[in-house]
Amino acid sequence: MNIKKYEAFVRAVERGSLSKAAEELGYTQSGISHMMQSLEEEVGFPLMVRTSSGIVPNAEGELLLPIIRQLLNTNESLEQYIAKIKGADTGRLRIASFSSVATYWMPSILREFQKDYPHVEIQIVEGGTDSIDAMMNNREAELCIYTGGEKLGLEWIPLCRDQLLILLPPRHPLTERAVIPLEMLMDEQFIMPLAGYDYEVHHILDRLDHYPHIRFSSCSDYAIISMVAEGLGISILPELLLRNYHGDAVVRTLTPAQYRIIGMGVPQLRTASPVTQNFMQYVRRYVTTQGEQVFF
Image (cartoon, rainbow, N blue to C red; front, top):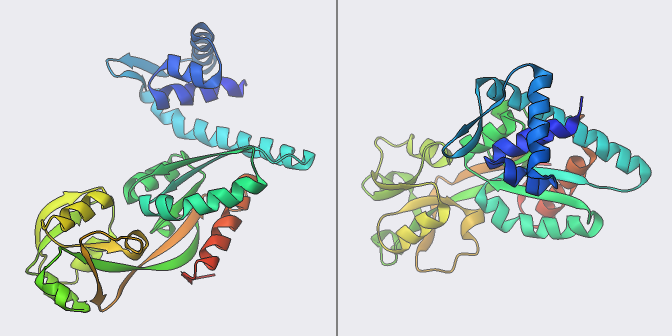
């Protein structure tokens, strides 16, 4: 079994192009085409089809894709363990996270990690709850940092409690209050995170007798902030996102106080690669030094 063929197959369907996959992996166009033909002959059936939008896996390819990704992850772990035994820490780590984590945690964590492991390639993929769930289920990432991963059957490590705050347009009547009762939101115009992107806000509003008036929805936290600042409605967003906000919108606290739990997860800690395990230690260290309400 030639692991390079499987790597080329995954890269081709991720990029939707044999030529882009060849360029990234250092092959010629004819070389990668020959590899794909050889792989399909090896398994005994086609794996891909060409469409107007590019290369996509067929039904058989879709069935094999998660298993092939798991195979590649296992091979990556093996290579990292061999490199570690030899004294050279190398490898690749793919991290799925909320945009707020990627924006406000990752730069500092990566700076410290790269000082000690300069040869490790880090890929960060931002997404909402559903997309991160899918990435972990399909083994498209080795580590996730978000909320709710315990329900996936991951080995889940709670990291810290992040308060959810109310964001108000400037000169909104509720800005006169330092703390806003949750029930006062029921008659407000509200900007809602899209379902599947952020469930915490939906869970909070479920406790009310009725929902506020949902005027707009968005999968972008930053779009929601801009819409609130323009007076289009109010919203609820995490403190991690708002603590460095200095725009026109006004941040206030809810009562009773509302929180989300940010954690990190891996499919199995015992089989996680050395690079993944090392990076997790840097995440823990960062959270501790930031004065967050930690859980470890």
